[in-house]
Length: 407
View 1 (cartoon, rainbow, N blue to C red):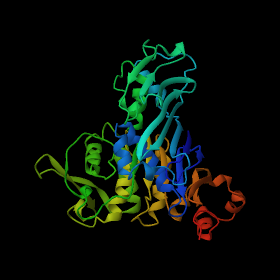
View 2 (view 1 turned 180 degrees about the vertical axis):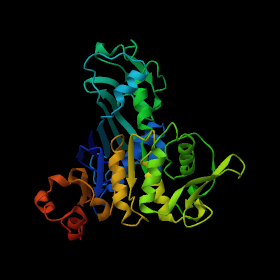
View 3 (view 1 turned 60 degrees about the vertical axis):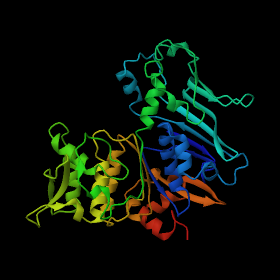
View 4 (view 1 turned 30 degrees about the vertical axis):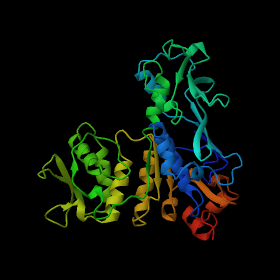
């Protein structure tokens, strides 16, 4: 619902109120990938891998904005996840009238002699505090308080009131919430963030995992490296009577791009509990193995499947989905993204005018780099944009240099 970012890589002073579908455009090195990486960083940290996430980004010195005098980065996120109240009710928690549904999570991390130091961390429901953590400089201790100052929420935390927890200083306090019965809301929040998915440009070459037979597993979200794509389609096929419409939507979308496509087949005689996905075409008597499909075909199949999952990730980030795809695919991809944004929040970084053509200006965010610092502006705020759109499409305006990339 709202992002406030200070000092994370090039994102030094960003305030943004994203919509359900967000298309990120702008030149290379303008900060689009850094923006998507922030979601991945938070997800990893919520999994109890804060230090690992810092190391994977080459240390805290490479994370904090280079020109920062304070040597600190701060993140504030106001969430509006649609199913929050439903999750709480499903857990059997009693709610008072007017219960706030917008969690606010804040994190502040400094560079302490080359090592990350978590200075402050908090989780609130508007004015109700559920978690508060602050590094005490005087004695160097680290502790977090899980509590509520408002007695109306005592039912929700089951009357436990204020509880002081000693914590591991090198990990987020909220990631150490394991007691679901006593602290259900922080626990639910963490589990929700851990479901976020960031899809970067992945390998679909001849030795990629996505092309190989896969061990039969239960239905799960698509992995960032696409290694369980066959499993997902297989599960949708097996459960097609119960999950009516999901596989059908995937197949119909593929058929719009590839009219010769007739459906999927599965080879299960491989052994070791593995199956292989096969592509049935009216051009050939026998179905084709996933191993011989073109890179673009696999990328398109993966994107369409991702956007049609029965239980999709609440936040989906996609970096340059157009890579390897024919421009005519962008229309169908745009339609799928719009439909998926009814149940997931999407952030899509792109250099494709063909994709932009089918988007509403209010869903487009223009990234730029000024003196090493990322700036973000919604396209609907650009001067005279409505006037331009009376004569040209967004695709044409981009190619003309009116919006997007700078020469």
